[in-house]
Image 1: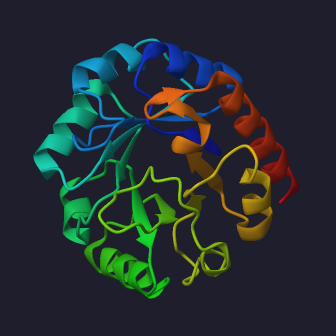
Image 2: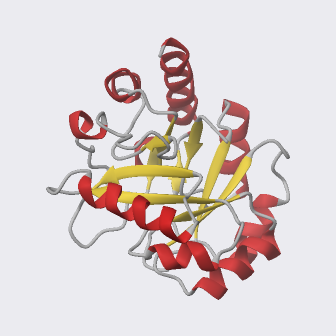
Image 3: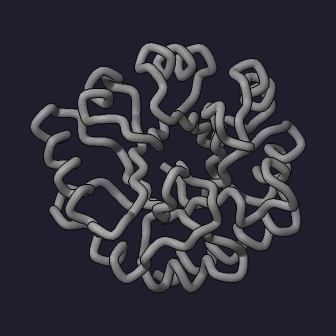
Amino acid sequence: MFRVKICGITNVDDALASARAGADALGLNFYPKSPRHITPEQARAIVEVLPRNVVKVGLFVNAPVDEVRDTFDRLGLNLIQLHGDEPPESLAELGDRPVMRAFRLGSEGLPPVTEYLRHCRRLGCLPRLVLIDAHVKGAYGGTGQVADWPTVKRYPVDKDDPPLVLAGGLSPSNVAEAIRAVSPAAVDTASGVESAPGKKDPAAVEAFVRAARAALAEV
């Protein structure tokens, strides 16, 4: 669905700058405890000015399923990102809405991811994409911590596992190295292209997109 995602967009200017830089997906964070949190009303102002070909992703953390459904439908988003502790049953309740399930890779490695996806298969609700982020106790992404690339490299485990989106501490300086090490389908960053939490640095965004696209073309 996309190759380069800039997450934690909080305003129209950053959204348009990211789209001009070549990002083909933008993340809108609806988690109230995040420094990048925005309201559905703020998100609507962003969505309305974006080109149609940019994938609009709504990020949710342990939100009620009916709230996720309502926000997705009302804003006309393209993808739901579940970044909390949502069980497979939550994906089933979302029906045919496309989901990217995020996992924070901890000391247990990939087995929890694999078991989660197998449960999804049993329920008939396999996510479209899997995002793997770094695990930081008490945090749900956006920490700037780098994921364990050698472990992530071992994904997918089963032949029909969804495509991988790599996140976790990616920046203009390391995204090419990360792509060469892991060979993901796409990459995602938030803090790695910011001048302050929730404020994107246009030059950093442009450098990130350029480096990511060059490396993705190689692999």
